[in-house]
Length: 287
Image (cartoon, rainbow, N blue to C red; front, top):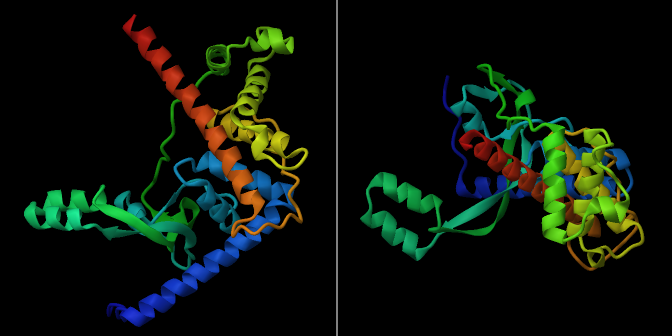
């Protein structure tokens, strides 16, 4: 089968510009839906919890193109695990960095063996000069070898509860049981975790960042929702912020920052719990 002819430089630029324009249109539609369709806001939060290796902005882009995505990789990365884009599948588009080689990297490349030069080019020797629309595929769009998605070992809800309670006392110097009138040992573990996640999200997200009444509470609920999904806990509701019709001078609408805050806070809370639970496990094995 004859190989596909390579694009000229002009064709490559035109193609890149067209793909970027299509992705910008996807983002515009997504931002509009995030302030008018609560189900889509929930989809974005679920995508951010499921694809926690992707940036919040790219999670928005993926949710708009493939709402049920569970594992997203480039075609090259899929081929490394024995899978490939299925015939007729259309790639998803996400923002990928354009990296330029610095002078230091160029000198290191010329002086080093090939393997070391490649490492230098991929590391600090390259700077991000912009972003382009890059193609990726969800596992549902691929064929090939059987693939088991990487997953962290589940953490029992009782352990998540105890870690969150200890962190709350250590970090905020408050006892949530005394302040809120709770006795978490009397609550079902999942319910206790949901309450504690909401409390952590409330403390992590400054009210001053949310300009409108109800916006802060919506972001807090959504951050707790993201954290619960990552930790394998049945989540409370993800609440769409009241930002419909808000217009600013910024290129990105207010819902962009609102979503980023909620996603990043939820991920940070979940990561702190996971790391603390792992330390507990290691200490228990050692002792």
